[in-house]
Image (cartoon, rainbow, N blue to C red; front, side, top):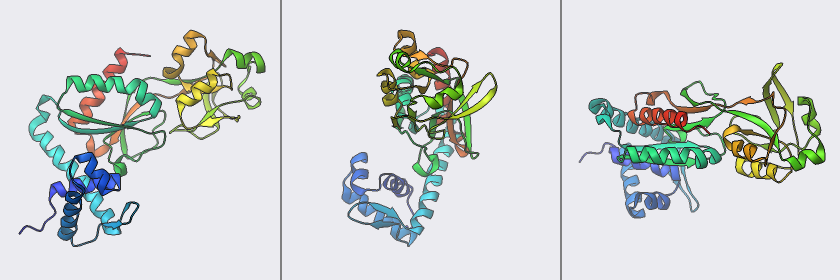
Length: 300
């Protein structure tokens, strides 16, 4: 009897770790919870170590489980990359592509692009998840992150797929009631609606202007971690916001929002970010190239 870890069990183990639940893993994969439990027991027997702490609420990794999880992710990716290298991805990518992005951009801009990508490559299974928080690509099992703003990590590959900037704006009603700021320092006396962006400090805005890069500390009555909420609060007249041009271009055109301190903006290009070891992945490459072409042809 072969007691070595089986590839399918290692892949299943990665899914279990992602969901921290046998039941949710079974639901996602369309198999029974008993099958998941049995295969995890076989994997533990094969590696001769307990991999999971089981409780009534959720599963957590043991120290040995952390090690096996890291290797299982690498083994699974290497097997996929081996197949791609042999076949040259058959000119048409296939298999699972897990990617993530921020909620607002993902819903309004990225989703239509991925819809077109899915139509072009019907064998590609696209799994998109949206977060308004930093994401650890390797730890959370994502192959690609479509990100707005700065990329701080030095262990990833990044490619700019679209130009973008954040601009200051407010509703006409707010400016009529509180006045229009004439300098960057004036923002400190205004109600600014702040957001916890994935790439910047909360409550501190860094903007490029006539005198180079400047920083201003802002505050206000309202804050959130969701761009769509912040945008609506600004339209309702609650204060000044710093938002991506793709998000508020329509509001500026309609007059619901008015540009403030137009000489200032914040660079916030759109990047495709992925682990360096996936640089040879045809699925990632095809998706990144498609998105770069899509956003060039569909500017907001």
